[in-house]
Image (cartoon, rainbow, N blue to C red):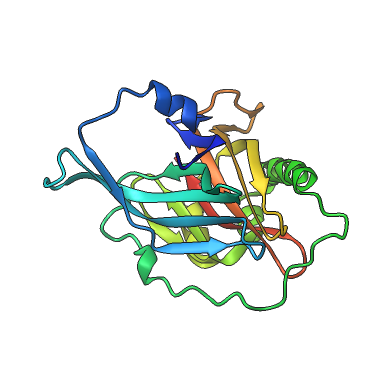
Length: 239
């Protein structure tokens, strides 16, 4: 009921959430989660939540899997619905607790949005920008990615502690010999033009021949528009 008609989940590649749930036989286990942070667009129609999740074989058993999730939401006439939902597994005991993060107040000036702003056209432009960023990282290295992040960016990876802030993200990615290439497949932009998300598939960066056509994972990014009007990555989940 909470998934939008075009809402995307990852199994592990991106699929239509409603269609996948209709064909899913279900499980006897218990999945629970706790939102620790939420950010809402100035227009009140778009936002994201994140926090820890855990899975138990039975309601009173110890967790057998844990991690973090990130959900992107859109508000319509009949309430809030999930546009995208993704999560990592086994974030690790050293992971930053999302609830312990001190989030900066964002009550400053509204971001600069073009006068002829159209959410669908902006989405298409952001998808193109996301693809160009992949090419730039492929050619020039991870600094090109880090410079396109917010100061409080969150980075989620499988079996890796959550990283927050540009320096922690840089330190995490500098240990990666080849940052994966990615192919954007979809996304959405808030009506106010201040928040957005993109998602797609990730590929081995085969430097001799360019991007591999074989997908080895998926990603979801939340973007926040800066006061100067630039789109910056506020959160990234890669699985």
